[in-house]
Length: 121
Image (cartoon, rainbow, N blue to C red; front, top):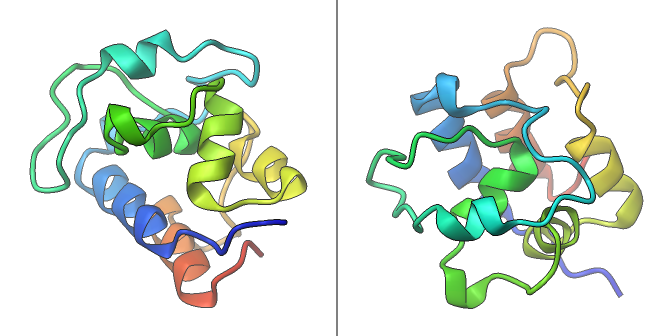
């Protein structure tokens, strides 16, 4: 069964992308990639800037913003899917390297709207 959507994590990803757009790159984490990169990147509390210099897609940020002890031991795609409470199809949609938010919305606006609605649209 699918977990409820993790609205808080969606909002935290929106905040970090808004604050540091240069550290958002939707193509950065491939589906099958091992997440040693994410594990090497220290957990960044929401009030601190991201310091390890890497960029992440939505999936990568979901993992990077989660303390290492709470990260599922899986690849980035599956770990982020579990952390965000997404179905497989919604994860494929949101983590697709060419994904863009609906016309007229920024990525942070879209992520906050998903959090507010409690579902991907």
